[in-house]
Image (cartoon, rainbow, N blue to C red; front, side, top):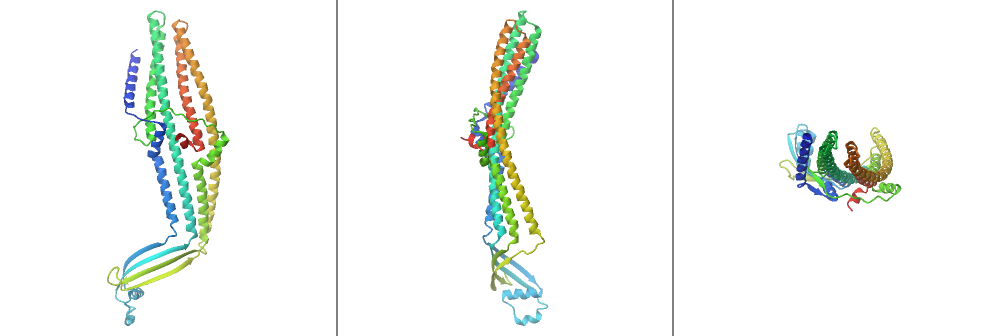
Length: 447
């Protein structure tokens, strides 16, 4: 009795502390939890920033055909004959009388101020790079959307885990109450001289074990709430409680229709498609190395030998240049072969991903059907276990059944209730997994 009293005291203290914490817990519905998680979850935020970086890269690649303008200010001092000659020419200070001193000139200063403009006219590699960057940005956006689906489904799982932990705690507390009643009955029979002391000890041991399970169930609930808070982007140690019963509509579509839907809705498949298109663009970019490039250029400059931004004389230059890579040691050729192989790999990965998505939909559908059948069996088992416990309790009161038989029935009832809770949660989770496999989970829970 002393051990039982100690365990009971510890359990009550634990529950009192849990109830006190529950009064200050953040309580959220599933939709509120998912909305908060999509806003604060670090994984989802990281994916959004990566998509933003890819979009910025695509924008930068699209601006490649805009002109580049540079401003330059430089100072040079030299005694090199050719250099000093050109400096004085640019400054407009060359005197034919200095021809005799060209071989051994005095030091000359030159401040050059220049504005230069370069305008690409025909750059096939830049066009292909722009196309590849756009597909890369779309791929990263699809990955970010898939990350949102993953975050939402993870929150859904944690939310269900909290509800399951609460239901298991309630079932365990009910088992504790039934264990106390059995102990009370055994004690009354012993005092009346109608029962055995061993029956009372068995009932006491059974109650102690059930109370230990209740302590573990309360701790599991606390941990489940902490995991939910962590999935929402909260600080470690914070707890969030699930307040509403999760109910998803039955996925009435057949697997073939769900597979067809998944092929269009799955963001990871879209990301694979964009990866293949990006590989196409990379192949075009590598082959564009065999084509010429054309660009225009121009510059206006001022030169002065005394001060920066001075203007003893100004000049300008403009022109058009074309470059054609005739031979670079087969580097362009081998780069083209490399990108062709990479494109083939992207095509194969896309085909494999499509097959895996079909399998995931079929698996989710079969697991959902399995969960429905298991739930029906679990409900029947609880009904049968409750009736068996009721009958054995009456038989025990009339000395027609032993305490061991009654405790076995109560244990079976407790296990049946726990299995029912688990089966109910599994069915809800399986329903959500069907929508997740089809790529419509986030739309479904936000309706």
